[in-house]
Image (cartoon, rainbow, N blue to C red; front, side):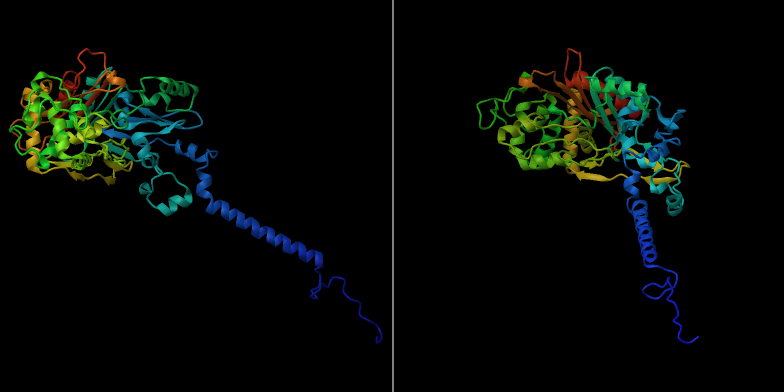
Length: 505
């Protein structure tokens, strides 16, 4: 059929491909791009933004998952002081506490509505089961998004010491910290007034009412006064000053007269540094006599003679000026100023001016003296375990600082035992034990108008023992209705009861 022209196919595209129009090809390309974009977006969300979205405040899935099983426990000795109970609500379980107010300064709280604090906060991953160390096969657990059973936290707390501390504090506003000097294990950590962390552990209206009531309480029961509050340490700081003077050769014999004049006038001023007893009102008193009667003039003068740099170094050996003192809960920073004139150094040397300390750090002072000059890092956690009891982490004693030589520490030990045997610390004496201590009554407020803070720091060991004292204690009473607001009158009996509890165990 010559002469006929073959008709052009209507379906040929520009490349001569049959059946695909220009419009169809463009549509196909567009759809392919959409699929690629969709895959890219899904990858971005599911891979690169997964963690961000998991922890978004609007995402309740993780919160629901967190409370879908019982929380791991916190233990004192072999006894659990926490638990979990079914709620029958949106969140399957909520936290419960055994003797909640007794251990609140140790455990903190775990609340569905208000988060976690103290050990409940620092060890939250382990307690909630999200800690990677709990996984039997981490990769598979991550892929399957399987939640492991919560692990347990074993504390270093001694139940008898904790009970003695809380019983001694009673209705007073104050705190106790007790340490085992040779290891740094915290034996008691008490703060009053206390609170029940189980009263707001859930997310109901009743929990909110309990929380609001605690927040509005002017006595601040949720303030951990043992760790998070600093106070002028008053004359208990004289232990640090005595250690600094002895370690730096300013004093070589604690029984020899010092060159302290009377009256001792603060350098650069016309103001004498007054004493609380006439027994201190004479020149040349020995360091031992000055500690027994808590003479401001002598210790203020020795602080100036030792010098700011060396006083600062000794204070920092005991934990002052450390912003990261974690046990693992972070303690507030205790303060000893690094820039002062000489009159301010004199006041700081007797625990006044801007000097401020937590009870924990003052317990470290007593413990360092008791442990022959070695200050151990304080620790509140004995070990972490899986729910089957296998150990995840075991805490080991760690040296914090070598504050002084054993020879100097022996001299300071004698100073502290003399305070208890024949000085202001008589209320801390224990039959059958050697006790060293130092009282403190710290003024504060405008023109010293506030109720003084009553302090006592101490250590004790069985009589005849040459071992390191098994307990060192710091007690502060921040507010009391007592008429005798002194360290010897208020704080020393509490320290004695805590030390007795440890010695009896």
